[in-house]
Length: 314
Image 1 (cartoon, rainbow, N blue to C red):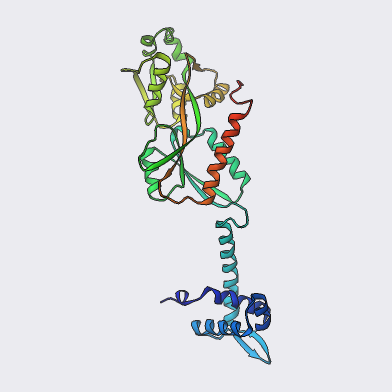
Image 2 (cartoon, rainbow, N blue to C red):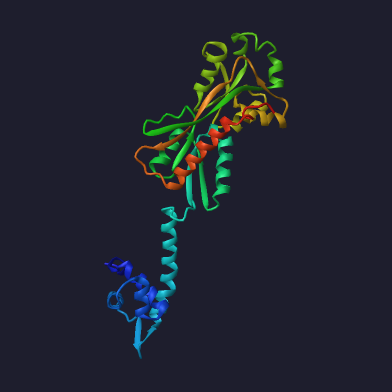
């Protein structure tokens, strides 16, 4: 059996006070123990370690060289341990630790990431670790304990995860003006519109179906999908090259159009909404810092909804 396994942690706490005060009597007062109790604890520690920690000379307590070494290591490590215990129990009121977040590729670069950055600025001792990947990867990361929670869209539906909706993201159809000029009658009818080439998300095909249902009253059939992508930026890049039209978050494309006016939002009847959710593993205990972060996200998004400037045109 190791020495640490045989050691009473309280022995070390008493040792530190005796070392600092150089007095069994003063140590007993600080620890609210009897002097004989302190002496017995020090003797038990010496017996466990098989060394002498203090010499008793002329009623003085003198640390041995072994005591000097033990104090140098023990004081630092126990102080660190005390700090850590306070931090993880939030007894000092300050958040810290590492929050591990999985993110669906269709949310990459979205305002949620900016909100998390704002949270990080407010809590400088909190660190983030982001993993971007498809639903299968997110599920695996949960099972391996590699993420605390995930930010996913409406098209991630793994049965072993719980979900809580926190926002709704409108998507609009976007095309490059050079491509749209090749199909001048694209807005006239469903038949004309489906002559366009399309850029599709690999894991959000239902998003395209929902947009067609909302704008044309029917599902797309045999459309020409020129590219299938994982994330928003790839979708926009293909659209910018005139490969096809595709669905892009409204707030994202409004910013992109400022930099590249050749991108055009195709306004027919209405955009389609993609629900943004927090996903977490059933029966998995989530850290306090991660829980607080989710609550902060929800409150921030609620404030955005109530803001009179929400969704005002630029």
